Length: 347
Image (cartoon, rainbow, N blue to C red; front, top):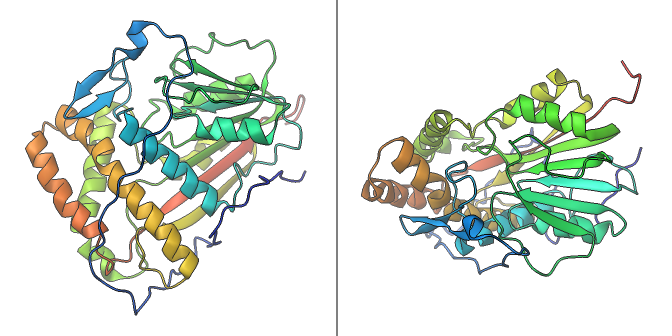
């Protein structure tokens, strides 16, 4: 079964096997880079009750109102821009593809869990105009300008799945960037499998929330390593662990999926690689990581770990310096894990 690829190729894409060593640029200008801010994105596509848009504001950031406190990251324009940038980075890594699962050329029903701004669902609906693509999220932050075959629903995908029209099962369920959003991943996988048609596919796409390096410069990323540990500790206490990407494959196998595949890509943080395409990719990812610091840290470190906002800001200042330091050859790992629901009668 051949994989259908996106017709829009991403510029500057570069394939990198997870066993490959990223070669640093010996001639790189080690002047500290400066962070940029992305632009504002779209708005809601719903007629909404006040309970859904009566947002909570904390430490200068805006958080979702529906099921308040169920997710620790903000939903404001700054976060929406970060999510769109992250999706752009993923498409560069995947050479323009929206997914890796071999779903075939004619999926009828597609579900996007934790759709965020809806950018993946919108692109998927454009790519497959005969498919019905539904995105679900706690926040109504999706664009009003959407394809006619794309729909969004404000709800919690961890609640019982009785709020959609499930008379017809889904051909493909996409779960992008959900690390830290799910209380019980094995239960989610089972629920998704029950909702897929026989032979339908489920796919995770997620970054591991920890730094890596192929040399000893990781030892100098003290704040980056500590931040990863603190976020993991806080997310465990919160009840939705962030550092779970390496478990996805086994969880899918345990849930009864077939043909489970795990693809891992190294993604550099910053312009330190010698390869010009990886250098460009690394700059995009550096900007995204800088934007993610407040999003992941504010609620977890103040609400869960009991830090003051001043303590968090002081810590993040040191962390930003490490991220902008081109002498540190840091990268992250992007996991794409997909599997198939067994056909009827298949062992």
